Image (cartoon, rainbow, N blue to C red):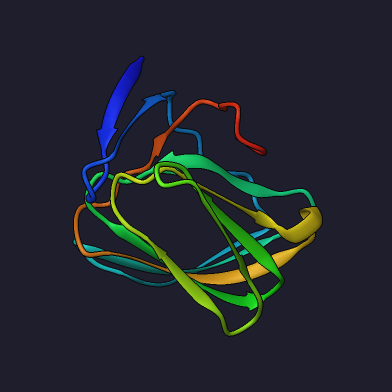
Length: 130
């Protein structure tokens, strides 16, 4: 199914939605989970990634613990290379993809909120890694 996402700055992008499947990663350590907020430490081995997806309500705040790691976004198209101690945010309705620099292993803290958690996978596109 193709849907149009309206970004907070008025830009629009078409994305193909696919069924949700949890990413297969080396480790998940829940720190806190409430009705409208989640905090988790995720560990990804070499070549593991968090596939392209977006959230309807929540902002993802990434803090690199071990890395480096890369957070890529669509509409707007951006690439954030994070080293330990660095962070970035992805607002609601912005598709994003998370992976290690040069497919290396990495570990990060993710703060997700405020709002109801969802994970809407999007199909691979023409972007690198998408």
